[in-house]
Amino acid sequence: MRTVIFDLDGTLADTSGDLLAAANHCFRHMGHGDVLVNGQDAGVALRGGRMMLTHGLKRVGAFQERTVLDYYPMLLEAYAEAIDTHTTFYPGALQAVDLLKGAGYGVGICTNKPEALAELLLTRMGVRDRFASLVGADTLTVRKPDPEPLREAARRAGGDPDLCVLIGDSDTDRNTARAAGVPSVLVTFGPSGDDMAALEPEALLHHFDDLPGMVPGLIGAAA
Image (cartoon, rainbow, N blue to C red; front, top):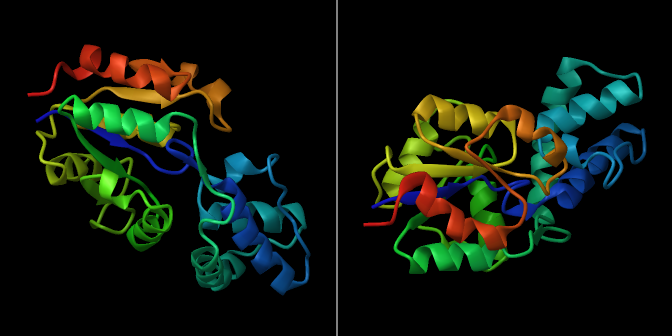
């Protein structure tokens, strides 16, 4: 079987609002108030919890690596408590997933979000059963851009890891697909959308409505 594997944050869903809220919870606890700003810092949010803490602490002139390490567990706890308050799927994302499944493709997720948090988010959003596989940052001993999480996501979705495509939103996704020897499609509607063309993926995706028609040209028709 051929498979279509999606990144999660910034690709399938805009999770930045809930991520920023969790980081600001930490900054308030430190006495800095709300340091990160919705919209403006969405790109920082989608680079993960440690990056949000690092960026915010540098903004207020209080960066120490020890502080990032100490507050990261608090950030994860705050995020888990309100993981689906502001998160929304990008227009057409779930419809594209359903159309790909109907066309015979296996569909899975490969994310650098911790697996338990990804499971929690997808379950809370009521869509976990749409995806045949979910590989997170800590599912294996390596994470993207190592190619093995992508290949494992394809295998768990019932597919041949050499016959998959990765849909993502970052240089990490581009490098993961390249390392795996498979094509990548990068979305242009996320916070870093204007930078995606420079990464030279096999295709750019401007709206999820276009994805089902794009996939056969990248990995062929599903078996």
